[in-house]
Image (cartoon, rainbow, N blue to C red; front, top):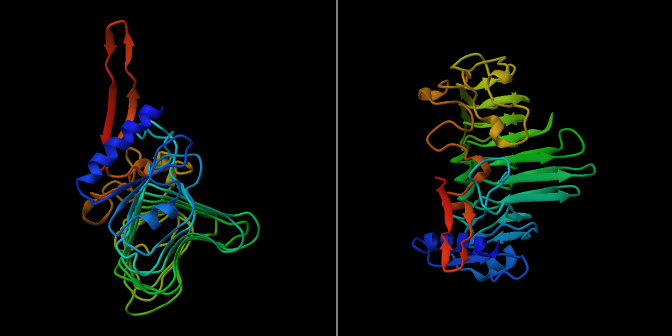
Length: 351
């Protein structure tokens, strides 16, 4: 196993060195020689524009605060549920991630961002412009009564991109969990190709402020949960359950609904049986939200693309695999007498 992980790390670092000044390894398992053992230490030790790789581990790497531009890459999630993911099936788990001034341009992908606890538990706080969350499993859970936020955008910020994530906020009481919570409004931001798995009556996307400067695109998501927005453009989404409260200047087209969330105009489809849309619309793994043969979502989006998270040229990636080569199968060599059985390595690039 140690040889397997070493080869995987070497391949990842070799690829990254060609495009980044410095690459840092983070691994908290015993007897692994890495640069850091926690995310906080890696952020502190890295310079702006560096890349940090969080290797798979059963133990969380802890919280991280971004006040410099960094790229953080993990191993993905649902690694046992899908084929050709990683040879070593452990996720890269972190706690609360916070982005503040200086962290503009940071990108986080392939992580399991998990926070459980008391009132107000939050997995991601965005407190600056130009932040990208991509291909992450973002999860919060409140055991006792209280509010739960997967992602909070805590003021008016530009260019927030939330794409290709699996987002699941949970709370003990109804209406207390939010997948994406805008404490004000946002400008030139995009929410696309995500899967929102909210419990009944909890919020998928919630915006608090009606302002004419607001601009938000919500496209090609699979949504289980409530939506309340202003000045947004919403298209090619599939609403499995929940409500939609249309705000000022909201525009919608080519969405598919299980009820009547969107009006029956502009290519929106109402009262669609979700059993006809997905492979398994009740599943808690991302492969269940692939469109089944004959799905009414096929080709039903704007310009004839598929609706849902797997539509467009930049679709949701199963297991949140980062866009770098990953070794998903490995066989060690064995020496018998004077003969050596060759090593077999299978890898795949997840663009």
